[in-house]
Image: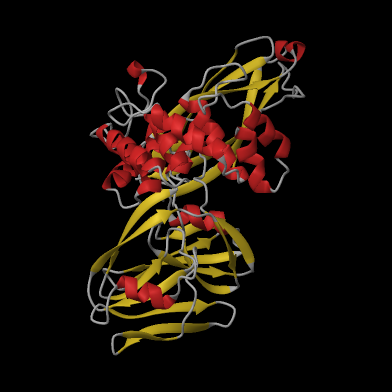
Length: 472
């Protein structure tokens, strides 16, 4: 079943797999773990999803849906046994049955049960919230009603439990599941009277134009106009109201593009939908860009590095709606400098490029070795290696620091042989209280000398590379 779901969308032939699946259906309409196994809801749900993907719509599907419905508990839940009612399995059933007509009563009962399992922290789980269960519940709720308030609470729980490196619990599988959950979102954006740099952060409905967007943002008494900057021509396209009707240029609204929205009043607007991955073609000069699904804690310094080197990008600007002025991050001496502002969902930014470049969004959170607050330090250890006979001759060590910023103090606090072939180095990294915020990289190379100060070589892994993030 999983094989069909995976390869059918890629255009691969699934005929043999589908026939195998059809032949494994039990007389009660369900599927089990394998041939000659009794039916269960989990494997039947997987099989039903695969058949939908493959375009099968005969009595096989009807019988499978009937089997699943017959296994629903009176409270709306599903489980492998009465005593093991499952948030995950109930969510999986909702996500699958949502693809079929005539299943609303089963789905609605399941949703009502799911909502009773949301914890005060916004997550889902029994007895306490988990990333896995919350992600699946979030996707199920979104499929049925994207405006359900519980979705945003679940998203807040997921965001709060994201690691600084962008992962969830440093687990590949959990991170993949959570990423799917985070693709359902309700994004609220505060618009101020006057100019706003605004971005459509979720999947844009088919055929959605500037005429649709200006109407969704408000009436003629609320919205003055919206504009799109065309980097290819260097000109603006403008949609505005005339006698209460949208007029002027009509242009497509595209995920990843930013727009200039001129409001007459303050207003909060909500966007509900799936976060999309987009590739944006940046042109030399000015580009107006909105970033979908911004990683938690992502800053303009992070984004500048992501966009390219000093030879590719010159600056990023944010319009401060409260002051009416622009904040700017730019490269100076090969390092991001200027105001380090937060990159947030719902806002658009001015990106000034030196070259044409295609960039994929959403970007991943930049992985760092250490997050260090100003005026604080971290301590750790790393190992390098050499042959046993070589290490037997070691009397002294050397240390060469490469690219360590002036506001960072790197100190070797200890060095010892911990095995026949391993040398352990203990160190501390201290950041001054006046250090600029941002991400910095440097290296430290270690060497060994014998009693006569002759270098001992070769050594492996003796160049330590560091990437640190300085925060307030």
